[in-house]
Each structure stands twice: as structure tokens, then as C-alpha cells.
Image (cartoon, rainbow, N blue to C red):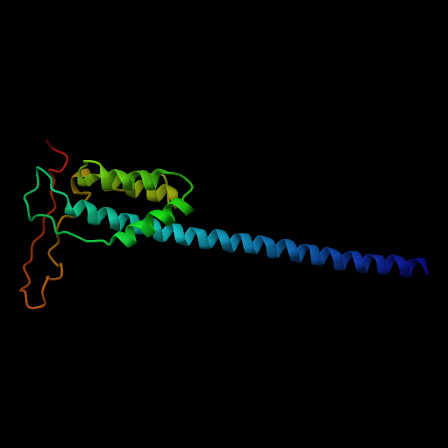
Length: 168
């Protein structure tokens, strides 16, 4: 009789252990899923911040750049606000938001995009090394394969990358 009681206890303990392990695994999986979803939102917001920065930079005037040498890009205020909200809710540090604010609200040169790109790389865990260090060609002003503004407008190939952005 004693052996059966011990066997029954072992079976109950084993079932309890399996249930506890299952609950722990479910909790870890749920946390992992939330972390993945947060990372996805953060990733999308970080890349949207780069798009917003490109739009802002393409609409500034720079003393060393001839008017018309920058093809403007546009962004809606709703998208900008949405991006800021997502960055503020998902980023682990202030660097991405601070660099985007510099581009949006301070007098800067187009190569400021490098600091934002590096902040995005760090925030997303994509590396700490600075990949693009060429400040002279950091911002693409115009390309030769851009879509015409109007469908009937003839294609005009041009390629302009300004190497004098940082020069005074």
C-alpha cells in the first residue's frame, strides 16, 4: 500500500510540475511576443523617422546649394505625430527622438541624417559602429531616375550629390 501511495504522489507531483512548467512557458512566450510586437512598432517608427527627416531636410534651403538642386519630399503632420508617439512609447532611450528634433527644429546641414541613422542603428540593436561616415554624400539631393511630377513630363536624367554641404 505504501508503494502505491508513493507512486500516486509522484504522479500528482509530476502533473503539478508539468502544469507549472506549461504556465511558465506560456508566460515567457507571451512576454516574448509582446517584446517582438514592441520591437516591430519601434522599428517601423525609427524608419519612419528617417523618412520624415529626409522630407524635412529636402525642404530646407542651404547657402551652398543652388535652389532647385534639392528635390522636395513631403510628409503629413498626422504621420509625423504618429511617429513621435510611437518613438516615445517604444524607444529605450531618447537619442532617436532628439536627433529627429534637431533635424526638424534646429539650423542644421543635410549630413545631420548620419546622426539620426546611427541613433536608429543603436536603438534597434543593429550595431554601434558608424556605417556611413561620408558626410559630403550623406544626403541624396536628387537622382536621375525620379518619377516626373506629371505623367506627360519628359524624363530628364540628372544626378546631383553635393559634396559642399559641410563647407562654409
